[in-house]
Image 1 (cartoon, one colour):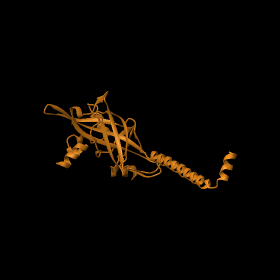
Image 2: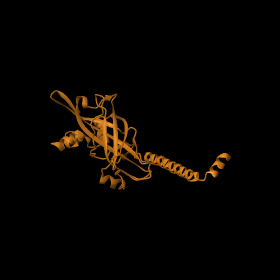
Image 3: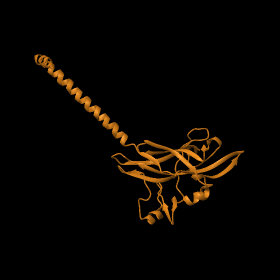
Image 4: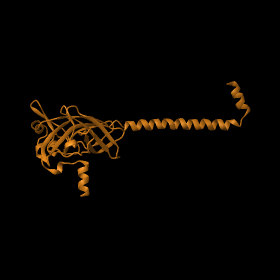
Length: 241
């Protein structure tokens, strides 16, 4: 070390080079740590999705033949929690649901529709009501005395929102959901206003009509109307027609 110092002192022209190299190293190290912080920041802005346990259900509303081929209309609903661990407000603009069909592929994307009534369950002698994403039920807000009863997808830093979502379509044969032990594999995706997608997978359990009408009063009124069918391919077909 002493010899190095003596060499540097005897060659003063090296000082500028040494300081230049040190400066480059400082800039490089600083940039490296900035990249690390940026990466951590991106991880923190990732929304965390969770399907509330025991809430994902599917229901067959009707089955009918077309040219000797069976068609089925079905509904899928679930209660979804979205957590925002970042230090910024995150706004969710839309949702999509897919399921595994009978040929083992992800289905077309389904978009949510409005519930006929607020989802609910009986708890003893009382009824527990659940909010629905992007759907305001004014009578429920009045009943609960809570104007924020319906989640709007604008999730504050460190906060979360929970709400129900309802999807409906009808398909035939291999395009129908693959069912094993009365369970359907599903994938729910939310998209924020920047277009970033966040997904979670789970399973939906079959529910019979009588129980479904207690959970979602009025769901049986969705048996025939075409307006309740909202898959991506169907909407694209309407746009192109």
